[in-house]
Image (cartoon, rainbow, N blue to C red; front, side, top):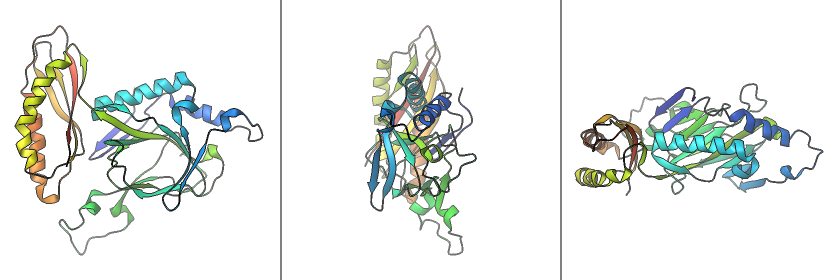
Length: 306
C-alpha cells in the first residue's frame, strides 16, 4: 500500500512509496560496509561532473541492485506512472550519491520526458550533512510580471519550492520547470550522503485495466481531438493532461476526472486553458461503450505541443 500522497500543479509527493526501499537501502549499505574490501560491486560509479552545473556519483540502478527486489520496485514505479500520470514507462533509472561538494544548479529537462521523478533512499532523519534538497522554481517566478506588486516579498521561499529527500519518498514534477539540488556539505561517506533513484516517466499513451477493448478508445479519442483542437489552436498551450475514468459493465463512464495536468499557457490565456481542460473532461464523461462482463479503469493522456 502507498503512504500519504500529495499532488499539486506539476508536483506529486508520495511518502512511504515502496516496501522495497528498505531492501534497496540495505544492499547499498552492504556494498559500502568496509572501504578496505575491494569487492567488484564498489567499482561501478561514474563521477559525473559538468563544471558549474552538475556533480554527483551515479550508476545505472538496474545493474546495481539485486534483480528480484529491484524489479518489484521498478514495476511499482511503472504502474504508479501509468495510473497517475498516463505515462506508460520510465526511462532507465539512475542511482546517484551526493557527497560533500555534490549538487546541481538550476536547469530544465525538456527533451527527456513529461514528468521527472526522484525516489529517495537517503537517511534524511538524523542526517549528518547539509543541503541535498530539491529546489523547483515557483510558477510565480516564471510569470513574474503577471499581477506584479512592488510591495510583495521576494526571498528564497517565495522564489523556490523546496522538497526534502526523505527516505522512501517519491517526488514527481514537471521537468520543464527549472530545478536544482542544493549542494551537499558535511560528509564523504556514501552511506551518509544524499542517495536517490531518478529518471523520467515517458511514453504517454492510453492505458486500460479491465474488460474494455483498448481499440474501442481510438474512434472516441479521434472525436475528442476534433472537438477540442479548435480551442487548443486559439491558445499557445503545451503540456500533458491525463484524465482518468471508470467504465461500468453497462458501458457508462463514471468518475471522469483530471489525474494530473502540466498544461501551460501565458497568464493572459489561463481562462481559455481551463475551459479546454473542462471541455476535454466533459466530453469523456459523456462517452458510452458496449456492454462488458466486468468494469474497467482507463487512464487517458492528452499531449499538447507547440
